[in-house]
Image (cartoon, rainbow, N blue to C red; front, top):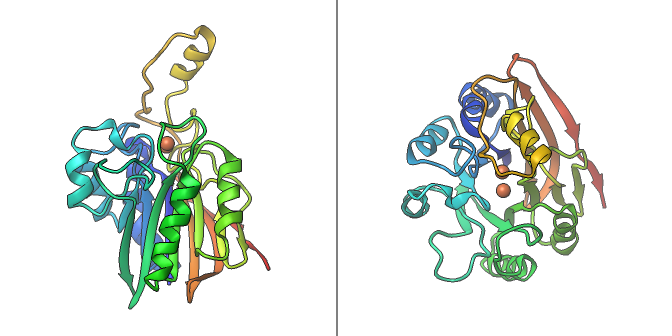
Length: 270
Ligand SMILES: [Fe+2]
Ligand SMILES: [Fe+2]
């Protein structure tokens, strides 16, 4: 099966790129299933129901979250009624779920959302949670396991790969909004530290650059805003799985000017 993963979709420019390009990418790349990260989809903060429907209609099958999952109050009901995830390592009793299982081409695929520890809300230990959930999925005979590791620290993402590479199919990073060039298939597990944002590429992590500049100059708080107009980008990791292992992985960038490129192809390590 071939899976497309779109990292943090930021605001209207990000959603517009998904609406404009995803159906065609599904066809040209032969994608069977598409995952996207919603945590910044609605004006940079969380997800509204209207925008969720817009993104599902555009061709996304399931969406993962992160620390911004909770920014819109309506998310709590949506986590039950729509194919949405929030990080699995929130404590018991928190609404929503961090794992969903899908049937793709007659095979089962588990999508898992985990949140890192450094500079993140205080949640349960992501490594202990990851081990526990992966063991449960494997004991249920689910071989295709795709993880969105939503974390600030590159070391946490890399450590998760080292810990789980023989047990899961793919670990892709989100949250920093900056794509990294370390796409690899390591012992059958596709990995990239961060897929990077889908949204404005000419500002600061998809947000209007004036606000962070002012914040950094003065130390005073300011409300982040998504620009109305910008040069945008859609970034997608594509992973082809065979019998639960990653056989090929590459990264596509589509620009708002209309051009696109295969930006990286994974090196395969034993
Ligand atoms: Fe984000
Ligand atoms: Fe985040």
